[in-house]
Image 1 (tube, one colour):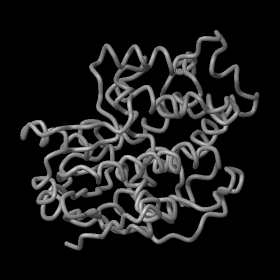
Image 2 (tube, helix red, strand yellow):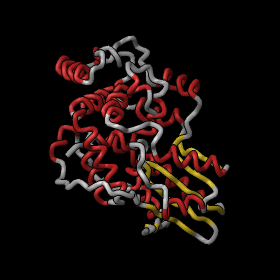
Image 3 (cartoon, rainbow, N blue to C red):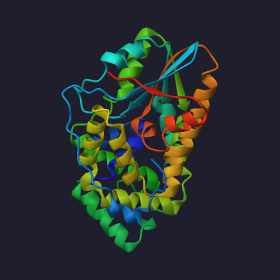
Length: 323
């Protein structure tokens, strides 16, 4: 079962940063779980999985938390999609139109500000090239992958390993029809701006990049090697994730998450800690009247460490809206 897609599930808000990344080809320049994870070395022990079939009309999962004067809708997003996918209708559209505030993971700054952040956080300042940080065997595998993708092997040499991995994992998706401006957030933000409702970001660009930039270098390199090893599975895995999302197969999505996030520090940094922070935000926001549409990556709303599970520990029950 493909596992490299998980990187895209959790990290694709970072496609916003890729527009500011010094990229070798237009492919790149155009882009923007759960208890007891195993190690990356144990990746081949993934559970059996039967892929979902992409429906004609996507009906992603939607939840709601209510009290006497506050309503918060929870909607899982996919940050990058192929053009033409239908999902903004029925209960999703109705709930959004009933809301007076949109909450997203991050609000993109202007291009100059994003470039500055990327230069400060994702570009290596030591003078040691990316490839020189790899073992001889890993370097050979990395260079072979770059060549297979028709990229100069020097393309990502100035980048930190984690950001090189972001770039590398997105290339197959962009070449297979995914578009950086077709993500769920793009549509929601356009709709929110058209209605002139409040838009709030849960995290800043510096925070999002910082999650990865602050990882130990050995973890970043392990992540890059994992991306290289699974590069051929990236598109197939993303297709599976989108199909599960479109069919509202939350349990299946959670199983994919369990199989994919196999390094404990990544699991805690990218998923659990952020869900805890967001649960605290929801808990506090429930003290103010209003109707909120909260849209975060679908991976955060699946599995045993989901946002809903953490909210339940606070006594806030997220009810699934069937439609």
